[in-house]
Amino acid sequence: MRHFLEIDDLTPAELRRVLDLARTDMPPQVLDGLGMALVFQKPSARTRNSMEMAVVQLGGHPTTISADEVGIDTRESAEDVARTLGCFHGAIGARVFGHDIVERMAAVSPVPVVNLLSDAAHPMQALADALTIEAEFGSMEGVSVAYVGDANNVTRSLALVVGMLGGTMRVASPAAYGFSAVDIDRLAAAGVEPVFTDRPAEAVDGADVVYADVWTSMGQEAETEQRLQDFEGFMIDETLMGAAAARSVFLHCLPAHRGEEASADVIDGARSRIWVQAENRMHAARGLLGWLLGEAGSS
Ligand code: CP
Ligand code: NVA
Figure 1 (cartoon, helix red, strand yellow):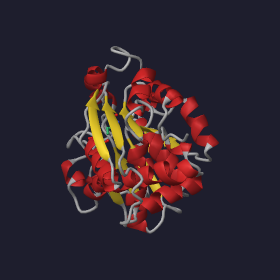
Figure 2 (tube, rainbow, N blue to C red):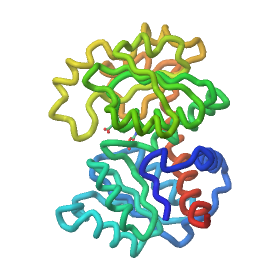
Figure 3 (cartoon, protein in one colour):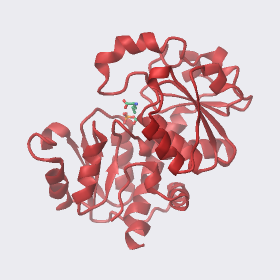
Figure 4 (cartoon, rainbow, N blue to C red):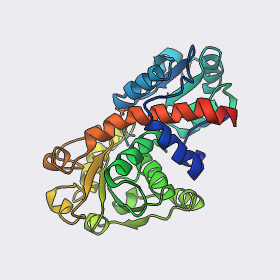
């Protein structure tokens, strides 16, 4: 039984296959007559809607469930939620706080489990980011990606996908908001060795892709004021974009806060590819599910 909790759950060849499947307009109907349960402990616009539509395009029926309805680890354990949903559905997706919750669900689930964002990883976003970068530059090979901001769930998955596809990654964060030693070891195990700095201009210098995410992720709201102070000087504006390559594009997983992590003129400007990136969430979801419930199940 295969699950998808982080990008390095795939081999580089499997990752390539998922991205190829994402681009096909004749998806295998791997969910014909089946459902997919989508459980959310946190809000979502892109993930919920892209997953629901991908399930429909694969012949299936999505059932979106708020965490309160099933009560993960309150009404019943995460394991029993997974066992229960597995009685009715061909796959389970979950957006959770602790990454251990998706790991515990996957450990007992009778059907594949997909991480729809945890505090540690956002692999469905990273697949869409890879599709977007490959569409822009033809390939990830040799593309340099500069991430500016909090080294978070989105950054970990992005670093993996960029590195596994042959790109390079630089991460600029305030000292207290960088990757942990555990994160760096995991990236190294996948052959990925980002460059770290606390100077945004150093990361962005000559970069092909400049990437932003929020400074305060879901679940960290109590730290908002402190983070606004700590990330001063990390906003991506036109001046910072001026240090990037002439062909550079701007990406943001969204939701965005104009005037915080990036200025409005960058988010809405000519180099921004954020709406292509958002649409790619659906194509990426179709590719991942097509592989996970098709070829991965029969291999
Ligand atoms: N980028 C992303 O995951 O968006 P949502 O939180 O709206 O799903
Ligand atoms: N890092 C953000 C990503 C939102 C899609 C969060 O976890 O809230």
